[in-house]
Amino acid sequence: MVLDISTAHGAMTGKRYLQSLNDGREVWLDGQRVPDVTQHPAFTGVVHELARIYDLQHSDQYRDRMTFVSSETGNPCSMSWLLPRSIDDLKRKRANSELWNRECWGQFGRSPDILAPYIITLYDAREALSSMKHPKCDFGENAVNYYRYCAENDLFLTHALGDPQVDRSEQPQNEQRLALEEELALHVVEETNEGVIVSGGKQLATAAPISNECYVSLSATFVRRADPRMVLAFYIPTNSPGMKILCREPASQYPDGYGHPLAMRYDEQDAMLFFDHVLVPWDRLFMLYDASPQLQRLGAGINFIGWANLCRVHQRMRLLTAVATLIAEAIGVIEYREVSAKLGEMATYCEVWRHAMDGIEYNSFMTPGGLMSLGDQAGMNMYFSQTSARMVQLLREICGAGLIMQPSENDLASPELRPYLERYMRGKGVDVDYKSRLYRLANDLAVSSFGMRQEVYEYWHAGDPNRNRINLMRTFNQQDITERIKALLAQPLSHS
Ligand SMILES: Cc1cc2nc3c(=O)[nH]c(=O)nc-3n(C[C@H](O)[C@H](O)[C@H](O)COP(=O)(O)OP(=O)(O)OC[C@H]3O[C@@H](n4cnc5c(N)ncnc54)[C@H](O)[C@@H]3O)c2cc1C
Image: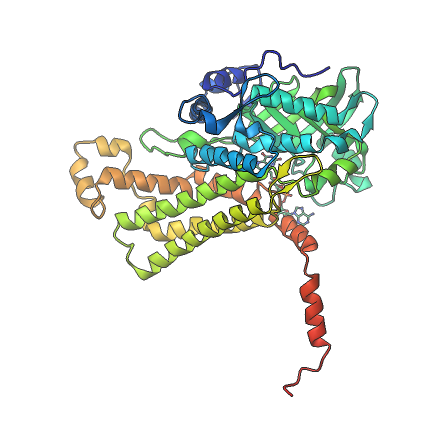
């Protein structure tokens, strides 16, 4: 069976996106099943913001920048799905990613633009996937067909990689943990003519309640399984029968009047996934029982993941820096040497990141699969998980107590309070309305539950930073310099 694209319309519209979410998906929030996420206050802000950006794909202003014409169907398709075959294509994809992230201020960890490159990576690895034989399907063909299906329908995807956080005292590959693991880790229960039946849990999937499909696989931490039934990767529609989606506490809802400009629009949600005998059709599987060739192939320096996340980080860095600058101006501290130096430190991070992005583009290369990949970017995620926390702290240091002490919109509208607010809560050359709203934006970056969730996201989203650092250390080539040091030390260190 091949995923059907005959009725596909290409680049998503806001209306189509909103309609696609009302599909019977089993979303749970605070003990209640959510009948329609587009009508629930925890989600309305974020889904309408996504709908707004989707509509830009069809606007005269951005159509050319955000879409390309499919050679197969003639549909206008999102630039996120363009298979890059040249540096010029990479530049076009960068321009699209920059636009997505400019529109959302770099706040969507899981915008539709972020996950498209995963499928492009699978497409690129199609030959390696096909080499993993299974009598019921060809994983490489599945990857090609799934890519077409996503591109022509402009699906919004997320992913779920990790195991539930129940007991990390032993690693998954240890045989003695198998019984416990079988209840927890996602695994194949049985094969049927239609596909495989899977059960188990996944922690966690950002944006699962508001996306169309989820890529379910193994994270680097969990790849070495003792039992092959736990080695599998597939894509599955969000409304698949048997899949429960449990949301965390929303960060989008505050009492009336305390407008949070980012939380209102960008709380993308995070969710546990519980699979209870869920059918995964054969044409949606990319890996089953045997991880080795795919993992080798996918680990061989393919970096399509790059632009969306790199542009997101850049926007977020620039937002943090610009808000800190405007606040320093608004309270008259920008000329102080200490404050300027802190702003200069923030600007340094922005500039280093921008230079690194240019370097990654400069080092792009043609893959054996025939696509143009960005250059190596090992280290970038660790760099940002460190600098993000530092930048948020610098913002807090520049803001002072105003970060938490601002009037609400209802306070601003109160005739009785207004004279006091105008007198005591204005800034240097700015009125109280501007100053309080600016500070509430800073609050959403550095204090609010939304801001804290973003901060936790930056630290963890690329996996355990310590594991990533260790992996980088293991592959970091120092041979030349260590040999030169040894040669230096082979001689007596005398002055004569
Ligand atoms: C906001 C947010 C969004 C996310 N979105 C997604 C998503 O969309 N999709 C997705 O797949 N994942 C997502 N993640 C999950 C993320 O990838 C994980 O948080 C990350 O891989 C760490 O795993 P963990 O949370 O299970 O922590 P754990 O692995 O349980 O780590 C807890 C602590 O134990 C330590 N530890 C654990 N194991 C070992 C060990 N063997 N040796 C030494 N120390 C150890 C860790 O260093 C850490 O200090 C998200 C996470 C967050 C916070």
